[in-house]
Length: 121
Image (tube, rainbow, N blue to C red; front, side):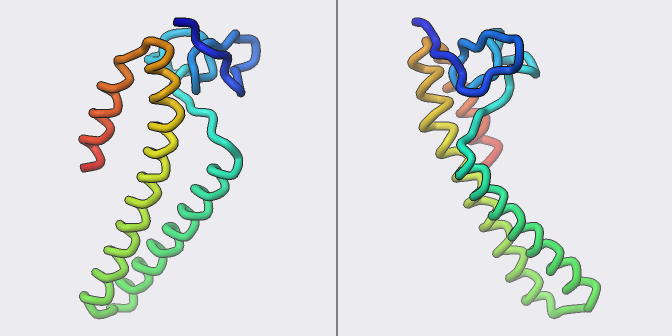
């Protein structure tokens, strides 16, 4: 099955692998990239900026000898925010990268997904 051209190919390289910036082996470093829509990038960046702020707050709480239970509540909130960020990335991966590559006949992407999920769980 023929792959469709990437929406953001690496300059000078003809892209054929869906969601990838090259036409070569997805295991190569230059092929391990995902073109994300700008609105998704902005949303993920905003989430990560909030998480960054939460972590700075936790550091400050530790420095100021905040009560352990209060620190743990903030750690839990930051961890939950990271998990929601991971879910947003996973959702995009499944709805775009995974589907496109399976349609292109690259069924090994499913093994990659299983490995990624095992790291998250």
